[in-house]
Amino acid sequence: LAGNEMEDVIQELEHRISRLEGVLHLEKMITASGGKIFATNGEKADFRTTLKKCKEAGGSIATPTNPGENDAILYFVKSFNTYAYLGIKESLIPRKFQFLDGTRLSYTNWYLNEPSGKGEE
Image 1 (tube, rainbow, N blue to C red):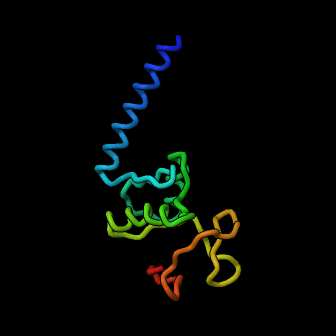
Image 2 (cartoon, helix red, strand yellow; image 1 turned 180 degrees about the vertical axis):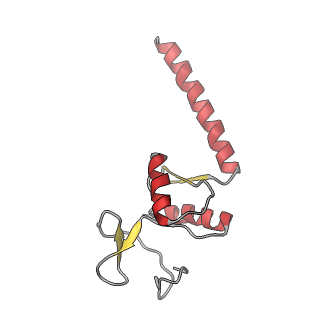
């Protein structure tokens, strides 16, 4: 495509994406923080299914690395009145957590005396 045609195509695609994002925001299916997009399909699933669905969508399970990202995940928890799985796991040291790939967490925001494993972390 010639320069102007390419610009028109890009502008049209940006417009369409913007409209889709608007609908998803209204349906509480998408939110953003720090350039990252957080999304949900609103369905309850186990951890393994959640990992699979995230991968199929071209993303990964949410792992908050700062307060803004934590708030983005909390938005879904509050909107759907449910819990959210995170992309972390307990390390070999009890009560210490790490990313799924084994690297140390750089951010946590646990309640006092949590995590306890009782679902209220």
